[in-house]
Every structure is written in structure tokens, then in C-alpha cells.
Length: 391
Image (cartoon, rainbow, N blue to C red):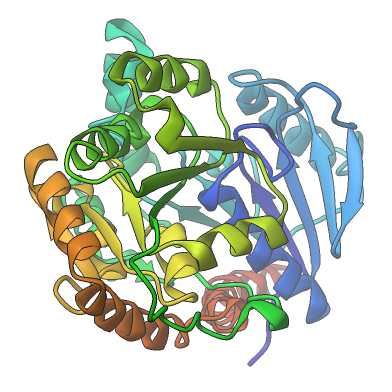
């Protein structure tokens, strides 16, 4: 199988961004895997405080321009200048452009001469209201109407079958949608062994949330779980792993509930510390309103930790096999009761966790990159051949 020699990745953030998350990690890990296979990969993304305009990391060349909204016109201007032999993309003639649609795409297909693949983790219908009434309306119009029309001939990639169904509901031809699941990084070797159940008196029931701290992640629901459980047991603790601009609101809510002593906000942590906290947990909570897949579900599963999440979040219906690797519920009350069920029945939690660990073993970034490489080859070679024939 032939793969392209040069690929341009577009994303509004990278993993170094203070608000970077799972979707950014997916794109970068695919990029580094392709780079390790000899592909020249450039990532065009936004600037943020303390970032450089250019950086080389793990085989990727990263170019940053513009901010939260300015990255979109800036990226198009850089692509256009590159085609004219100017700017940071001068001399970089990509065989394929991957346009990441985090609500709205870059619409690179209107500027770039290369084939475009649109990467969508999930649709944002439920999240747009957070942006305000006007911006939310415009954003949803772009995502649900304009983008499917502009990209009506382009290939789409998404990370789960439920997300693929959402795209089809927006009018994207299902034949043009490819599902390529997230991969997973290996656990540090010395943290691989599952903990030995204690034969002493019951230890503290440890819950954890691994998430960006933003409104649609609904971490408040995890705090509600702690508030409920602490009335019947004082041996419960919640570790909140991750940071974000909603952090202060969540801390204030914890104080309002009176659960300060039962919760630790760890903020951003390094990979090792993240795995240490996950390994110490009994149950992972993911009350997010919307997920394309739920990478944190699989990261918790690597440690034999089951997840409780919402069925309505869409992507979790695939990353969690409910009743086998975790529990999917339909509302806040069920979220609390499902967590209580696992906390009160450690054997049931361990059974789900063991199944989750086996499921997690089936994912790797190498396999994800294999899927992307096959997609790249299928979408670049015909275009290149046609171009060669026209010369």
C-alpha cells in the first residue's frame, strides 16, 4: 500500500494548548505515527500564551497562527500563500489535507489544491448554546448545513459508529464516512499490575474524573455523586484530573455542596501521575454531555477501572459496553445510583473492570494509523494520478 509523502493537518488547538484534549491528541498521535512511517507531516493550529510560531515535536512540524477564532482565516491565508511559494508552507505541497471540524471546519477544500478529508469527533448540537444565542445559531448552521454542502464530495473520518450516524443525519453520505477508532498509549510498565484486593476493612472508595474542565463535561454531576454518597459513608473520595476555564466554578460548587474534604482537584498532571491516579480508582465517572468516543474511558479501562457515563453522550455507547465494561445511564439520578451500586459492590466493579481491561487491549495508535494510512492512500493516489495524466 502506498501512502502520501506529505500531509497537512488542520486543528484549532494542539495538545500543548491549555484547552487541548482528546481530539487534539488523536490528530497528533496519528500525525506522529505517519511521520514515523516516512510521511512529511505539518500541523497548522492556533497560538496561545507562551507558544512559539513554529515547533518540531515527535516528527511533526507545528505552525501556529491566530487565536481561538483567528486561527481559521490565518490558516487559509497560510495555505493560499504556500501555493504561491510564500510563507511557512512555501515548498510544502501536501498530497492530503486533514481538516478537523471541532464544531466548524477550516473549509480548506476551498483553498487547497489537495484532496481533503474532514475529521469529525462528534456533532456539537448540544454544545453550541454555551457559545451564546447568536454565535450558537450561526455555528450550528455552519456545522449542520454549510459544511456538509461544501464537503459533499469529500471523505469524512470519525471515531465511532454513533458519531457516523450523527453525520449521516446531517446529510453526509454514509458511503463517504470512515470510522477509525482512537488508539491508546501503553501504561508505564511498573503500573501495569492490577492492585490486590485488600482483606482488611473496606478502604476508601475512590472515584475519579479525567476530563477538561469545561461546562459540557458536566463534572458537577460527579460532585453530586460525592454529595449523595457521603451521607451514608464517609470513606468516599473523588479525584478530578484535568484543568480548564471552568475550574473555579467547580471548586465553588464543591464548597457550596460542602464536599471540599471529599474532592481533590489535581489540575493538569503529567502522564505518569495521570496513570497513578487512574490505577488507584475504583470507578471512573464520565458525565459529559457529548463525546465522540471517550478516550478517558479506555485509559481508565487499562487499569481495570469501569466507567459510568450517559447513554445520550453518543460516543460512550461504543467505548462502554454497558453491563460488561461499565454502565450507561439516562439521567443524573441514575448516574448517582449506578455509581453507588459499584461502590457498594466491589466484586461487581472488579468484574466490569476486568472486562474493560481486556477491551482496552484491543486498541493502539499503530492500528489507528494503519486505518488512516489506508484512507490516505485511497484518497490521494487517484488525485495524484489524474494530475499526472493531465500534464
